[in-house]
Image 1 (cartoon, protein in one colour):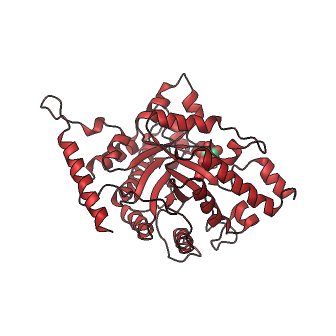
Image 2 (cartoon, protein in one colour):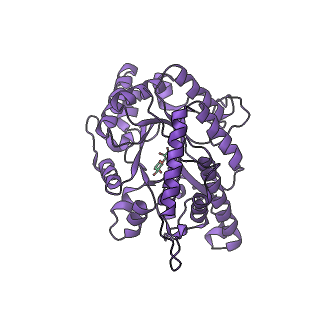
Image 3 (cartoon, rainbow, N blue to C red):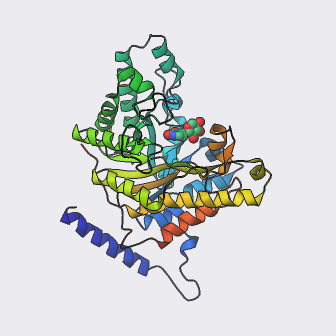
Length: 397
Ligand code: XIL
């Protein structure tokens, strides 16, 4: 760390202490941090607390609570689907910006940062693109040019309005895929080869010099064997190191954080160690899509508290592990939940055999769960010497 940055930290710390001392704490009405929103408490550490936002919730006039919580509890928002290619360009050559613009305006009105999600992904691509490639009417060369144009068009439209872009999403396979040796998977790697990743970051940087450019993936919360053939975190780490060596403008690694209470998962120190390893490469990190789902057994569905309670408690613990690890590492810039209420969670739609749910921090009636309270207490009880203000990375050229 350069001495200049150290001085800046000192100033921020002093300023923070001064600000805390000015908080009105009269005998009759003591300062009550539990009355603050997650977002406000996060800012005490310079950490943005975000949520994915769903236009159905945002536009439902009979449900003002969704809008209220989305605008007051969080200081960052991500479009859950509105910035995906199939949403933006359903017909070739015709972009529909309505939902994405609405999200960006919502954020502006509420002084929130925006995580742009997502420029390059193998899912939710428009049918004209995938079928054109499948029937040979779109050549490989044309495909690469279409990708360049897409990235340039989208990044350009929101230039200066996006804090972090997920430039490439989920490029790496999982141990359960075939072949089971980890590799670059999916539509883009198959058609363009893995070089598309470096290209995508360069094209995004050319269109917006200020946005932080992220690689985003799931199941990379902690290191495993250390062998990139079966350890996805190691594979992503090696990839990022390789990109940096080639001078590719990658600024950060987004760890989605889709967890389930039925799995082993990790402890706080394992997750902290992973964030620190990425930080040592000079990369920012973020938790970008946190939710912790559980199996909806017959007992859970019938309201059996003996089955529900352990799930809610395990969920809260897992949310908290990621939060504490993030707080512990200064380059972990934001913690985003993938929807904040079970009312609109993607989990029941996507994980239905066996059925899963209970994945977010508020229930479907907007009652905060234990997970919400744990995140809040993590933010309240954290501070120096181990939890310090966030670092402010400069976008790589
Ligand atoms: C999900 C959305 O939540 C769903 O509404 C949609 O139907 C499918 O995609 N990883 C990602 C997100 O990067 O974009 C995905 O979002 C969840 C997994």
